[in-house]
Image (tube, rainbow, N blue to C red; front, top):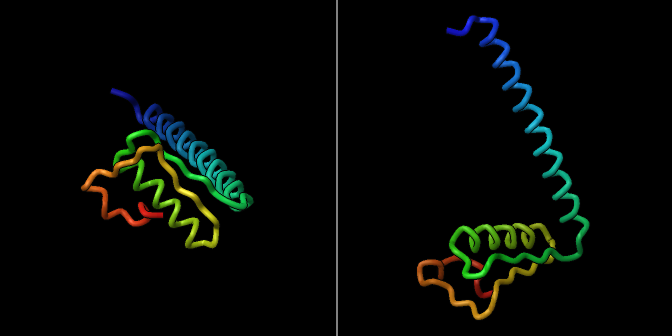
Length: 94
């Protein structure tokens, strides 16, 4: 059984790792936001034969850009045939 000091040391290391990871993620997100803000147009693409996750995330970012006044183009490979169960996704026609 671990003694109390060992458990506290592990918590400290875990908390420090979580904090440093959060700092790195925050910095990466800030950098991505700055690149998007500086771009005249955001061009988005997804993989071949996109599934719901690929289409949904790409279209969500597309709509987020447009809602904030940023020109955005969402594209996918041709020929593209959307599966019937994804036809409800807004923006497939843009």
